[in-house]
Length: 285
Image (cartoon, rainbow, N blue to C red):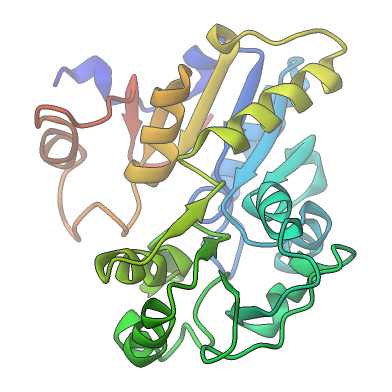
């Protein structure tokens, strides 16, 4: 690791990109309130002609995500459009229209199913497919609370669609579990899981296509910069798709009191680790 690998400002990289793919939870907000410096950085990039797409593993359609951002207080001037894991997962779910669907997750994620002819309501004992958007109560539960349900699903060879590949996120300083953690537990039992969000290619293909539409011209991957705090999702997904990535420190990966240099060496120094082009302790312009 070199000193130049650790950036104090995103501005120098802004000059090398036309489009940013910016993660939401952990970068734009912490689950409760906006990250002011991140919002300012995105606004500054847009002012100089850049396009900001918020690319998120939220398991809801972009319209629902936008409403949540409004409630939290994220300024609409910080971004051009949203691409969500919910958007791309809907194509997977639609294939199960008319069949018995078990929804694993909170009621707030039900917009995911709207208009698809796929109505959840099944149980683990009669479902033909399970769609996991999260934990029913992520404030108190862990994947261990789903052991019996997952065992039943596995015994019946029920496939699962995971609408949010994130395993954990940081909410106002606390680490909470996401749908990806439940899906990982199901895979550990031998269950079959399908994904479409980060780090998988469909969400990046949709984002790149949308960027071209917004800019009225095709966008090449060399002119895209992905910014996120999830190594296995944001960084690995961007690198595998062929776009440059910048890692933003958060409690998901960086230990309390750990220096950025030590964290970078630990997280990205190992052979085979996905390699961002830079790391930042905070997303600032």
